[in-house]
Length: 231
Image (tube, rainbow, N blue to C red; front, side):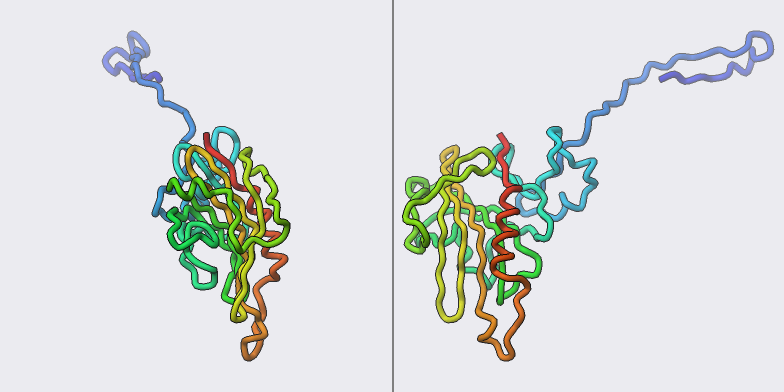
């Protein structure tokens, strides 16, 4: 950068005198991606300028990332992001669906379908446990498992997960899910695509669901594609 000044005293006789000023160049590196810390408003990253929050790999800034390394979730349309499982229409707020009473783990993030209510609700849950007993039993199927006795293996973001279907119903209430479990870096990761609610005909007058169970399951399966890993 150069700064030019006029030498007023010698302007007529000597012309312009140029003074050179050595200035430090300003860095032009891009701003790091915005990742909401634990407890922060998860909507902050989504509200930011996409150009400022894009990662160096070209991936949009995540709506959730557990740390410098680990599981992350990219933006998904039609959901709200929550970092707890405390909602009155789902089975329980435990770190994984159908966890035993003594199971120890931490809910990480939930992607709740917009419009979810007590009649029909859907959300993608991710939980993690570092408890030794939970890790040892991570890939075991719960008694609520339905469908084929043998679980399948599904790749999620490059990590193999054990996949199975679970379900339960009582007193006009139901909960169904496609569940995924994996052990990675000494932790058990649980992903549950949960569809839950109440039969609409038990209300007087009968209520209209915000969406069908099939639609909820399809949207959650699409949202699962936004899950990836930071290494």
